[in-house]
Image (spheres, helix red, strand yellow):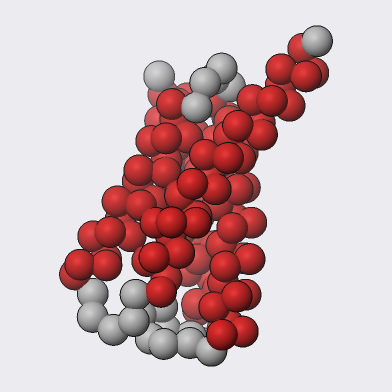
Length: 121
């Protein structure tokens, strides 16, 4: 049980820390409007780290289903939804998190499971 909790926390930490680093190092404010280039960069960057978070969750938890990936996706989307309704400014980052990054963490868990199934055959 502790392994599963740590797996979800590690997955979420990967996602959040990578996001914080992107905005800190770029100087872009997450709730400010951004250029199309930066939005596309964020889309690619966030998708990669959301996938990494879902995959690492699988590596740590070693489960045979996607239940924990769904938990991670709900946490990602939940915090983004809370931010969407409580923050002012542009909401493009929250929308990416809800509609792209959260589902990507589930897809990465599916990739992990498929890889494990193929390795066991």
